[in-house]
Length: 426
Image (cartoon, rainbow, N blue to C red; front, side):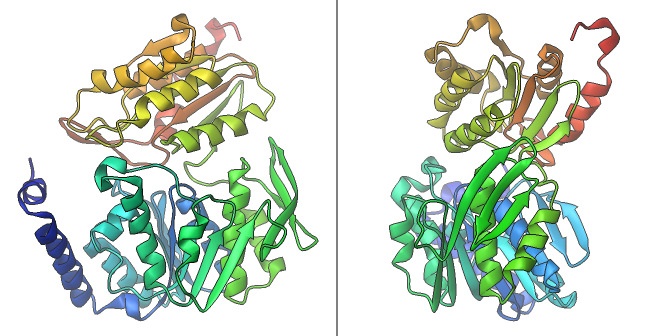
């Protein structure tokens, strides 16, 4: 057990909170309080944060602004962009403060951050003057870490309490009322169902080429897959308009985007389609399967696991049940077991799969994630769909023995290339 874990285990909650606060203050002091010298946009919610951040960034860039962003997928400062190497959505306070300092040095006009409940709990949002707060949605997640859904929601709300200027809100989420209570100079509501919203999407369309919708009579045709990306796009447009960007510029920016790293990312097109997605919650599983079923396909093969370390154990059988109701073949494997026994994690997922009435002969348990991905690829035939879920662009896998380099997309392509299709009947 590392020093950090020992400190967290031994200190009382109020002292642990003070410890995190002091670290944030120290980091801000070392880097000269950069979060007070640049316009910062914070995006919070359970799902869609990374995508929304990147869509906002692309819109602002199209309008001529210099932009920095930090997401669980990528980190960008002006013209430099890298995959997030930290295995966390909102990295430690020194990383964030250094990122904001780099954005200042690079003369960025905006810095856009994913803001997580755990980050807020550890005061990582402190000493940053958020100009705009964005709410995507709120679903049950991180319940064990926060003690209850109410505590989880409370943490998210602290971003809006701290942001006094602009709030951009998803009006279609059932938790909206809680986030509406916080005062702001300007509030912008986005919706796919409420015509009274400031930004209202009509003429919604989904296809294997992407999604389409209209705002105020202007048609948007995006190459991104899944209805949920319409909601993300509306929020991005809301931020764009609140920053003085014309609707036509928003349209131009969004229509240029052909891929969102690790989010419904198609990594293989033929002879079957393989999609890598970060999905790791029941709601995101339902969204992914719903999107995939809209494509012409024969069978659906899904490869997935669930995080260990005591993280939301309740959801494991739920994920299994959703997959069992939607897939034709399931391959269960490691995701990030941490210090838990991988066999026990898989067994908990399996309970949900069996409960769904899934055909046992089509269920495989292969803990080694590379081997599991290979199995999924070899099960697939022409016009099938293979889903690799749970990690997206994450660059590490955390085992009980430590961290190992990883990227589902790279591993999938490597294993695909090694398959001899001349001996297989597709």
